[in-house]
Length: 229
Ligand code: CA
Image (tube, rainbow, N blue to C red; front, side, top):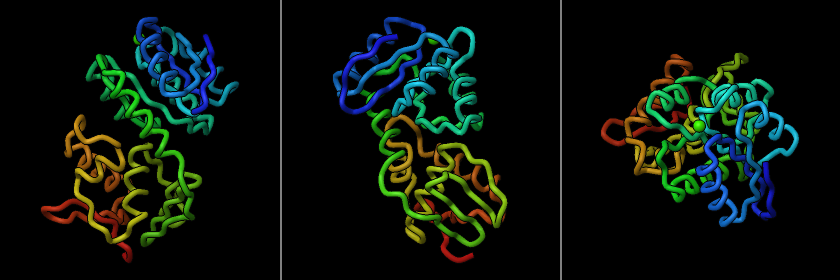
């Protein structure tokens, strides 16, 4: 564990490979962040609780508690500190995306430090900004303050990305977004993920919200949130 001064907030880097910790730390400090590090999961949980970092860069493959379990325990504590996962293999990506643990984004090793910093900035930006009241689309209420989605009075559990996609569409009811626009606004990058990612997340939202899902497919263009249903 180490700390250093930085004006943009404290980022916790959880990674058991010292060379990668050094590399990430170097770029974070260069960007004006303070850096705290942990090499295993239980230490990471304690540091998040004690130091309240603005974000966690979290390796999936850790000794003891792995990164996915660390994130799951944070969310179970209702701790929504933004998490940027670092994964080593495709099957880890599948685990990160398939589990509903509120992963905000991920990079795959080997990643470029520039890519990691770009993702981190996006993850941080997504968590800030003005907080409008609940957005109401038919029977669906999207509360961007508590990050809860209700159908009538029943809460529907969404992943962080599903929530971000639904909230983005709901903020601009009726407006049609292309898949590329959604990738860039919700995921924060366009080059890495294919537009199919958007379709997959829309399908997941429809699966969870059923007939109440306010997302409409606009053939040949993309998606829009319907106002009145
Ligand atoms: Ca590792």
